[in-house]
Amino acid sequence: MAKLFEIRDIVFSPGGGKRQVRVSGTLDEGSFMGVRGPSGSGKTTLLRVLARLRGAGEGQALLEGRGWSEFTPVEWRRKVHYMSQKPVIFDGTVGQNLRMPFGLAAVHGDTAFDGSRVSAYLERLYLSESILEQDARTLSGGEAARIALIRAIIVAPRVLLLDEPLAALDLRAASAVTDLVCEWACEEPGRGVVIVSHAGDIAALPGISYVETGVEEGGSK
Image 1 (cartoon, rainbow, N blue to C red):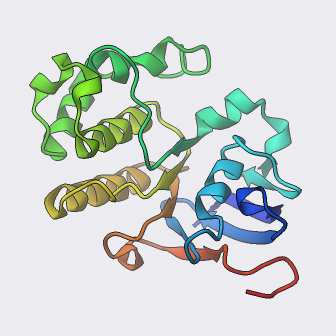
Image 2: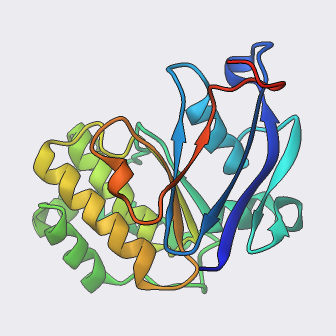
């Protein structure tokens, strides 16, 4: 498999403290990278660093051999998409939330909104198509998580950064999300997933490797 995404000696301080963590790892096409570490060790911080939402003290990430400094932050986030544990939901209907990225300059013209694909994803994730007309602010936590995932994958990123995507879901919905993400990662070349998750068995995800945030710079835990 081709190397898609590389974390190269990224150093950061979780929570703004003095503790520093150094992380390196490689994500191949069609595979998964799990982020492991105890609570408070910086798993979410690492995802935010990889999305360029927070700076790193040292190191860089590379997408298909190109360092993140070769992309504008907007271009990078378009290709390396971060989905937080608490999904971002905007005012308006669910349908408007799903269409919103396609009005942004970073997406406009690169890909088009595909209503039939959205309908198929809704069905796969046990959501009725009538939800598209619902006020997005009235969504439950589990519904919002699934809508945010659909919104993320329909803009065709190269790498998905998923922070606890199963946390708000029951077992049936969690299984459906896992299956959809696996299918998405493998259905076309040039895709991969970096995931933080305590729910479900991520060890069964295809081609999964791991990076650790529990090891401090210098090797101590």
